[in-house]
Image (cartoon, rainbow, N blue to C red; front, side, top):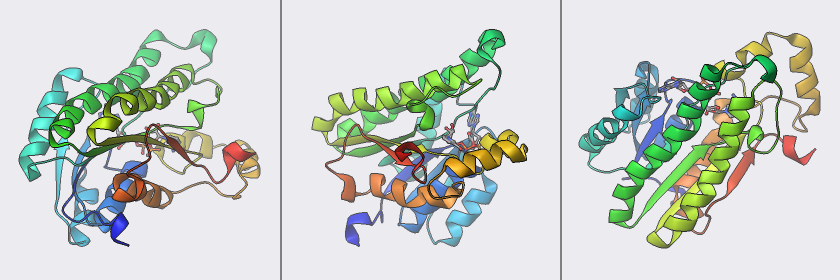
Length: 250
Ligand code: NAD
């Protein structure tokens, strides 16, 4: 299984304190990577779980919606382990309100973190990867990178953008030894979907539409992120992998 071995690699995972980011950070560590966890709240639990796998882990607390902190985040991350081989752009927010009354602030906040920060951070880390001639950038897209959704116009715009920027960066950086891809999770049980899960009827109607007949869990993104972070995916570029229990096939 050496194709999937991440021993000696260093990953930076945003939004690693909980949910899918935590699942991916632990999955990367289980495959051998050391991990720098970045979130706007402490990632203590994730750091402990990574250390329990025998890998090294550090954390940075930063509000990634503020572009002025991003250079500092990358400098600090590089200072921990000397390199970044894998960047996982996972941090994201969602704001729900019908389009007719959706506030511009909600729209802007979502675009700032979910889309602009994905580009800015990819650029900052990408420069360092290009210098070294290798690197893996994995961004978290969504079913709403394809579909329109309801009451989430900013989120949908941001996740369509994530799929687009993944292709744009792949076009420019594939020849420089970098692979830029995305994971599009379906309906996963995390804080992001907690308001939906409170509504039993809505939850059931979604479950009924998922061919796998269940919602996804943070563990479900471990395998896909290890694949995209490892040399097993060295000829994959600009692609978004759906991890959705078959939702998009329906
Ligand atoms: P979550 O709310 O548990 O995770 C969001 C993460 O982003 C947290 O770690 C949080 O600390 C971090 N974050 C939020 N604002 C931040 C900021 N300003 N600065 C730094 N970090 C910040 O939910 P999740 O479902 O694990 O979401 C992770 C990613 O997966 C998001 O990009 C989300 O859009 C995407 N996603 C989730 C689902 C789902 O069904 N749960 C489906 C598709 C895509």
